[in-house]
Image (cartoon, rainbow, N blue to C red; front, side):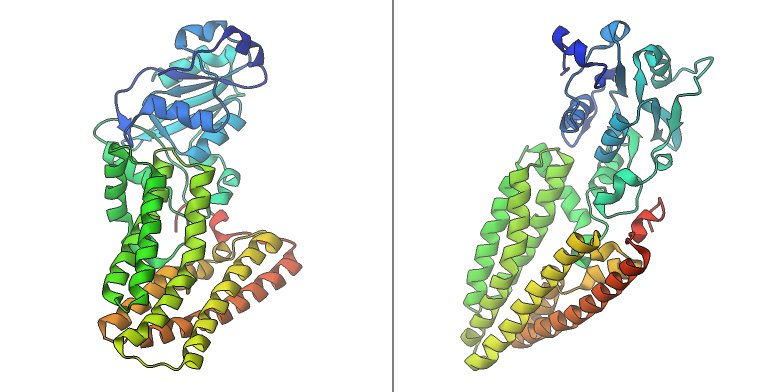
Length: 398
């Protein structure tokens, strides 16, 4: 597939670059041919005008030239568009190779030589030849991580490794211990299988929603083992749907709202159903005790979310990425997956009632720690004027 530049679009080339995919590739990344994937990536970044190689000599303005066998992280697509006079280096078998360029039309023949593996006699001083790690991290700030985005040359030998790299690149830098430590490998294989079948991420999200309801009803009846099985499967699909959307470039605003809305709303209902289901197993809590525990859990849940929102709105920073200790604390803080661990352990030992008490206690402890965390951040901002994430202070993964 190629985007053909129409004659009326040529007048716009001075204002925006046109895209040209160089060469051909039959390698697929997440079930998409790499050249089609690149065109889709650039279109999502606002560059939908494309030309064939034969039209380069007639072009004016600036051009984006990209090898057809390139695999480029989405943040680098935006960086490449925003950086004229740039030749981007990619990696293959430990070797750095020119993989893409954003150049004036007059420099296109020279850039083509570089992308085809030739060595021009002279490279103009105004052209920057950079690896991703040399571009700076300003364009990487929103993803809550330290790792450098990838730019790789693809072939059939390294396809699996490239898919793994791109898959892991979709993870946030701060998340819970289950999502970060347990789910990646099985979620990778599930995402590959679903991508091959062209399954919609929204369909996975809807299935996760069905499991949310199933877990709620099972907890309500005191069927904790089956309810936990459905709940853990839901958390797995909650990881898979986002990864599937990002790796296949099918994310949408509606899908994002559906996914995050489901994440935000369902945990309190699970805790209430868990508490109400205790009587089915003979745990005779008085109504005041039950609703006192649930009130602590629900209030703590809401307050923690409000604290996180306050941090983003007024401190300009996600509180979990401020310092290394904050990121480590995010792995175990009293959110859904760590709380499910407590409920699961209690169920294994035959005391689901103690599981609910443990969740209430852990939420209150985390609420206190979040309060201290937030107070420290407010003081630090008042002294420094702004807060900077530790993830942006270095260009490599910890």
